Image (cartoon, rainbow, N blue to C red; front, side, top):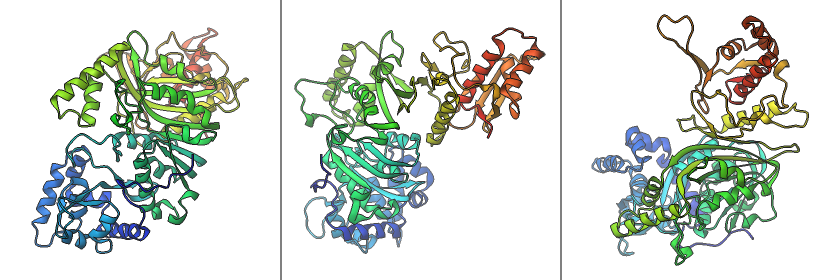
Length: 566
């Protein structure tokens, strides 16, 4: 398909480039930034706003309006973040270059009752400040939420800056790449971030309104994003279409996607207009995620990667990762982290509330029953949510798959830590005679917890080919601490734990010999020398002691407790 260039009547307008420049200048002069708004309303009120609680910000705005000379910053906050109404005079004063008429021409505001000159104006969209480490202060337009504009969301609602989009931005590994794909761009947040390390970004969406919002946001923020407004196509291509259809035949170095993964009950009577396109791909069950896991490797160059969020159904009697492994095509490296599990009831409540479908009691009861009946038809016991990283395996075989359940709090941004873990995994695999990396391949689901290094009946052969750690120097990572617990009066500790203070913040249980190995990893001796010395010290003369100990050390390298010495 060709590039998207149509004007969408009920989305912000880019037909007036001069007004976009004026708006950017006015917003900067107002200090309508994340820091400026937080300082103005107070950090606690701003934190409440990020929890979708508007009242503290509304009260701060009302107090400011009672002042003898209120700050003009109150106007965009009240207008776009709270959903209040303002007069033309208030808007003209706050936006001296753009003016109320300019804001209306950009379709950012609309009359409340009638288009009379003295009518009150209200927000037509949300325009929220956004701060990025890569690009600085930005502004993002999206549709108003249910708190700012009561009622059920429109079915082609364009989602703004939410928890899922921020999570994806934070977990993305960001190498310098030539081409990147933002699949299901929404309002364009992922494209913003991709532009900081990709020469060219292709952004797709099934919704014309979403692409119109993305284009508006790109042009409004052209300066900090390094875009020439007159040559947008030089850096970004906007494509209209479903999933991978708009990029058929193309390949990319990097793909990111916050796809419409929400599992929604289907009906033979429904039409596309009945679907919430920002979250629902129109397919039954978790077919969106299964299809992407199967198809995404096909649009990657060799060694190219993809990262996405997703939901997956967990049928009764099956491990959570079984079906995900079945979806992956041959030659695909994969790392899947399950972050949360919900029962069918919890899942129904979450997504009915998300679209404000809980405001009509009869409709809510009917839709709730639809969700439960849909899950029951497939014997779904629970629904998982998590992070998915894929790679088209570079010129080596076999590929590896790793599935973990990590539900505790992790450090964000997580992307650099995930990238470092992947590099360590490749390092562990790089010296294998056949190029295999079995240290990364977990045959069964990995449940994070204090028994992290306990024997696993599903684990692969720990003596399989891989980097020979005998000759490698290892160090304890800088964020790692050790805990020892023992009964009063006991001669030796009963529990020895390693904890990470950064990244995935893992905790792992150590045996006495492994604890001794870790304590000696200061870069002076090779891992083989340390393991051999421990064998002598502990009187272990069996043939498996050193290989077993080095295999466990390899696991600690993979998980970041130990790192290769430079």
